[in-house]
Image (cartoon, rainbow, N blue to C red; front, side, top):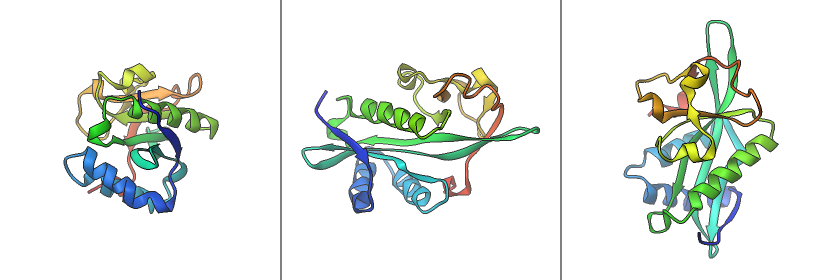
Length: 172
């Protein structure tokens, strides 16, 4: 694992973060999503974190607010998306450090759960389980093992049964 500092993103980091996202993903979709979330009411500045290596931003993670709706109630939770590390440094534990720091910070801020769509062989190492464990469903068709959740506090998802609702800023 290489040495990186994890800190909150600030406005002067936006261009460097976009560069990281464009390097890490095959399209601009994730970079555009981050831009849209930043300009919305669902953005939580304290949960937009960067990884800095040798004074250069090499990774980024974003958690934002979403809802889980059922016929009986609506509950707030967090979405983790995206997490990115420049290609040259992937596989060095930077993404893991961003995730662990982000989950800890989300807990400290009083959030009780996180939902994500991701690789079923990567995220369980951080405690993520299929969201179906809590009767939580995605709003679109994806393999159940890729739609996951984690409780940041005991029983953080127990009463949040239903369908995840992503804000309109998530739409392309």
